[in-house]
Length: 198
Image (tube, rainbow, N blue to C red; front, side, top):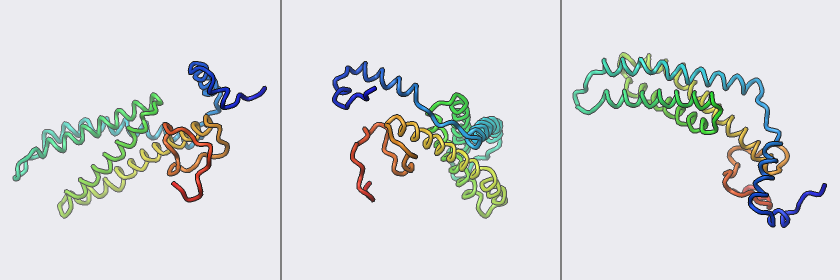
């Protein structure tokens, strides 16, 4: 069976092209998650759900025990508000990952950023105090590994998406690195870029 030419496809109606795109998408061989990806998803689900659940009583504790500062300002409001945002981000990310939604990528990136920010402020603001060792221990053993885990999960989603898009575009072989991936919204070009070009 002859493959229609570009000019023939251009002559089709938008509905005919959409029907072909739906058929190709339906028949696409999507990358099958390996054991590493399946395990990563489970660990992310447990980590984000448990993180959100642990932060809820922590927020209540902070709101009741944080003392006011001599300089004034809403010190306790800032910390409690930040932890509420972190708990909400982790909880939403857990739900999106469980539902296998593409926007989980955004939740993973936001949650990883908030976890690193939390570690930074905990360590910075406890420096040369009695809480310094605890903040450093928490950052090294909990917060930074969680941020790395969430970032790895986000990169995995990006790689799998890039592989699927490459197949839909008819490209063979592995997709280019994430650093060289064009936006999905940008139409593919038939000419190959010159080596070293951006």
